[in-house]
Length: 213
Ligand SMILES: [Zn+2]
Image 1 (cartoon, helix red, strand yellow):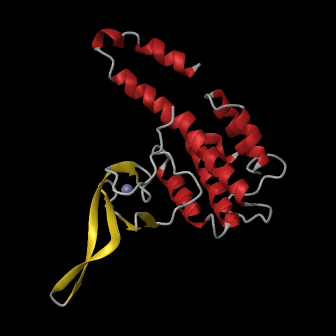
Image 2 (cartoon, helix red, strand yellow):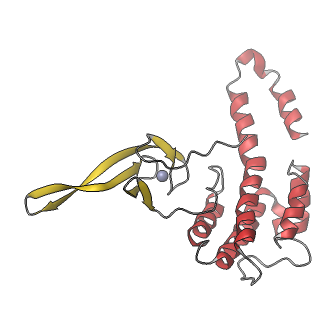
Image 3 (cartoon, rainbow, N blue to C red):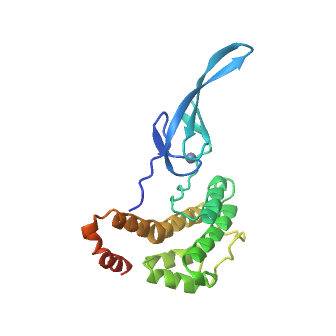
């Protein structure tokens, strides 16, 4: 039940901000140029302003030119802050260096796993624990294929010459899938339970146990 991604679009009132990755209301400005006391409109140059992160995006002739678009998906809003930092940095550099982006993403994954399970130092054991907490067992296979776990695992932060753009995109998606399954979905269930009328709250413990599986 992932939040639907609304890409940035010219003169739209709201979309997922290309800076902070969150769905937010956008204010729009048409730019004018001042010279001495005269001013004229800069044809085709507009700015959108994100109310959430206070950043501007630059549009020329209805096309977003800053920040640069990335092939990588945006991070989910529930991603822990230090994981998000590496993730967004990797997003900025995927076109220029998939190898460097992958190194950042393996570090982000390690941070995420540490955050979710205290045995995160031993990655195989941590993943087993996360499977018990509801992470799809197939993710283990995906982690092996992109050398996060298994015999060919690369230490987080190291450069591996075999990393290409496809591997990097898989790493982005795995991070989002784990955040979705183990942070966003439980949070949404908790939010839902909080909104239950009092008469229904008696059943809350039952629902909670059902969610743990
Ligand atoms: Zn923003």
